[in-house]
Length: 119
Image (cartoon, rainbow, N blue to C red):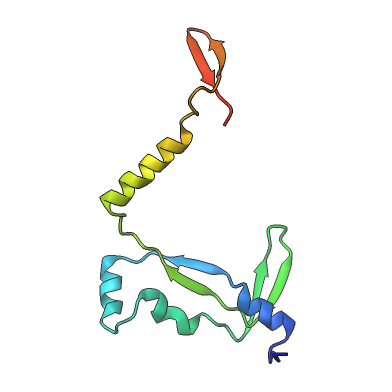
């Protein structure tokens, strides 16, 4: 059986970390690429705090967290390829169309007839 050198609390704290999304300007990305790093990779050494962190929950209760670790990920802002966009749009439209021969419920609202079908 494998032995774990971490306590249960340390293991859970390392497994379930807060995730922060980083959105950088083109200039910031260009500067970090000089060192062959992304912005998230550049700040990674500073994402583990060795001191106690005081945080408040929505009920304003104070919680003390030791050895807080934060994960930083870059947000990808490149749009998908036109072919992928077309495929996604076709998939959404085909899924939302009612099946052939399905009897629809008609509700009249003013001058409009609304066809409601169960999927």
